[in-house]
Length: 136
Length: 162
Image (cartoon, rainbow over all chains, first blue to last red; front, top):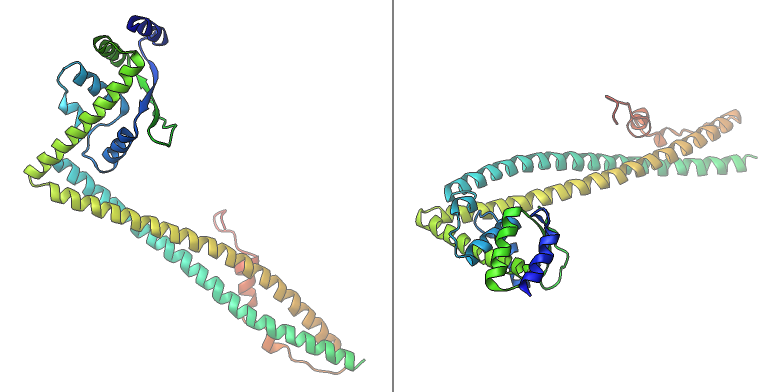
């Protein structure tokens, strides 16, 4: 039974590699999500995960050096760099926001002034039409 | 390697491109556990993920031991806070830009309408003047109309933009 399935797989993986579908449980999905969001900087590419899984199941040691992407101190440095970049981006976004806000305010101000003169001009047109009519 | 979550419900399916070495090892697992290759793939993934969680915890234990844990937690919180702040700023910026675009178009329409009304007033003023009636439309004349026209109707092209 196993041999039959393996031979079918061998055909599928004729060149010794290929794409497989992995069925992931809800718990594993949640674990993966948490690991990628808040976990330690561990290499969690699916291929590495499967590779580590084979090592565990074959009772072979796992090469920790290839799994940990950064030491805690390197992680601190990385976070500091990212925060500095975020500070820069925040400053740029703040300038852009202020620029757009100022333009918006100017358009609104111009619009309200124009509205005032538009009303006066409309009133004048109505008055002049009336005068023209009265005077024949 | 490609990963594609295709099932948003409980659990799901992902696609993983396996290398030759990993395929050989999975086959070995399938043989030893007397299960199919497909089941071995699922088992290896689940086991590997548990191991990754275990290693993640050990990494944090080590961080605690060397006194870096609190700094990492604080910096991560700060990063999340700043990311949120940046997203909010960008969102407001886009909102102002969009509103500004709307206001600009509204202003353009109003200016065209005002110019039309002003032309009509001028025509009527001339007609009345021919009949000896003086009507002052000065209070209805918006100051710096040319500047407004330039700003909203006849924008100068700078560096091929605008």
